[in-house]
Length: 203
Ligand code: GLN
Image (cartoon, rainbow, N blue to C red; front, side, top):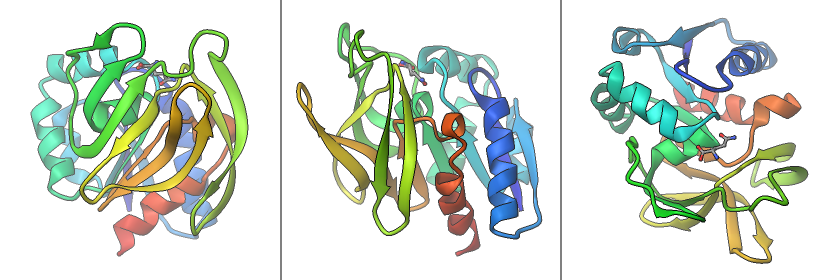
């Protein structure tokens, strides 16, 4: 099994490590490869879009001419995990808490609406334990995190919490073979989301 990590900007090196650990944990032989152009999309069985700066990753996806191909490949069923900025890029609807409509380039493949920088300045980064429905508990690290505030169609919440100013926040959403998480599993060393992604390849 080949797991690709989108490696244009952000936390991709950490995801290489965690994806390797997740393959080991599941006892599956596989390679973890970095994806920097569209030619590598053909040889992977799953992709991870890391956290970082969604505007920068979006612009680089355009610049490298891979935004269309990546969008079509994911829409065509390539199992995909997007964390933080990656979740923003996967969402069909994106707003920023401060600036409102962002008009940034996105993939727009998942039926979720996200609010960028939802937790404000005082809480630029924080951690909490979260239950992932049907899978168990993880330690979740949030860094200038977005909130998933809307889900429709086939998108479902796997984890969430109530947050004073925002109301219901979905932390992990799934839709078909796509998973979006607003936290960074690679920072606390959690392999669970990567393992769920690997299960999506096998099925
Ligand atoms: N605030 C970043 C954005 O809007 C996301 C932060 C992150 O990925 N840690 O793209």
